[in-house]
Each structure stands twice: as C-alpha cells, then as structure tokens.
Image 1 (cartoon, rainbow, N blue to C red):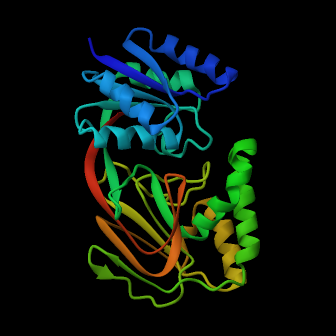
Image 2 (cartoon, rainbow, N blue to C red; image 1 turned 180 degrees about the vertical axis):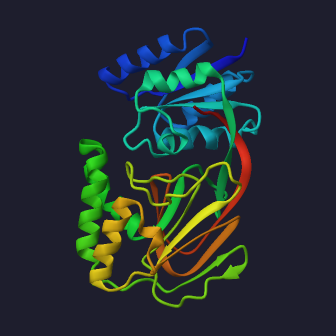
Length: 295
C-alpha cells in the first residue's frame, strides 16, 4: 500500500485541530501517519524519520507547501515523493491555481482519488525554491505593510497592506531596471513599479497577479508594470484586483524559462516571504520538478 506522511503546523489552534482530525478521517483508507512540526529542523527530522514514504500531505497554506518542497529538494527526494495539499493557510493561493476546493475534506478527497500531475518549480538566484510566485516593487512593499495585519485579519490584511502602500507610493518614482527574459532585454525604458514571475496565478489571498499562469507548462509567467503617473497607478491597482491588468498598455506580460533583473535595489516577496533589497534578482524554471495530487 502507498504510504503517506501528513505534516501539520504544531502551532495550530483548537479549531484547526478539529479540521485536521476531519481531514485524517477523510484520508482514512490510506496508510497515513500524522506529524506536527514547528521549524525547518522539525520538518527535516520528520522526513529523515520516514525515509520510505511515497507521499507527503501538506496540511497548511502556501508557506507550508513551500517549506515541504524545499525540505524534500534539500533531501534529494523531490522526484520520488508525490505531494498532496490540503489548504489550511491564510491565503491558499497555490491551492486556488490547482483548483483545489476551499473545504479541507473535499481537498483531502482529491488525494484519495489519486490523480497526479507534474508541477514546475522555480529556482531563484539564491538557489531557493519558489512554488507559487515572486515579485519585486509595489507588491513586495504591500506585503511588508500587510505583515502586522495578516495574522489578526487573514486575507483582509493583504488588502490593508495594498491600500497603505498605494497611498504612500502614488508620487514615488519607479525603479530603473534592466529586465531580460531568456536572454532578450525588454526594450521599454520607463521606470518600473513591479515585476512578477510565477507558476501560480494568485498572490495575497486571491489577487490574480499572473492570471494566465499554468504551473505545468514548463514556463514562467512574467508581468512587468511600467505604470508611472498617480492616476494610472490607481487604475492599475483597480485592474490588478479585477485580474485584467495584464491587458493594459503599460504592462508587459510574457512567458519564458529564465528571467534576470538588475538595477535599483528592491525587496522581493517569494511565496509570501519578504527578503531585503537587492540590485539583482533572477529566476529559472525546472519543468515538472515535483508531482502533486490534483482534481
């Protein structure tokens, strides 16, 4: 029988514990062992203690999925283990891209059904994994502003961060960047307010930042916004919320396998984690680097 290791957050509250119990009941026909972890060291130890499992079930959100994929890659087991995702996080953005149900029990039933698909993996310039998306510019600033609100308010915290960042950034200049996709520089010279790359379509709890992304097409989706005037920035933010900003004339939307960005130092948000400003960012795709259960 196929064996599974289910990984949950050790800091989950009582309500989450009941949901986890319901999910484990839904997985009852499978050979599943539940472990709880609270740190990368705990996660690595759990995988070491279960060296022969065929699948890992992630009970969590985008951050938990990122941590498991990273740990499996570090252990050299990413190609040998099938990953299931039961969305229990704040944003659950990659789960939305995969078409998983919001209801955890329904998502667990996807795993018992057994349908799998190869999923691409992004590797950044620091050799870190990106499962969903990374972005620099105003999106990263919004994520930074949302951090104090996210824990208390959930997805609403992302909205507050975006509003605060938008109000502060209306008159701030864009960044001067040289952007290349598969070795070809983008020719536009205007200042840039955001560069986004990713496998997943959504960030920040449901914002369709890369609305045409397909995590199995072997390519990165890339969106570059050259929006500059305050009026157009407000319009751009509105269209981002609607998910049709990529059709604007001040946005370049394309696909590739490698992206490099050099220029003004900007912070980066990668799978929801913020890193400090850097003058160089890069990403490349590894097609079908992992396998996941999908509807």
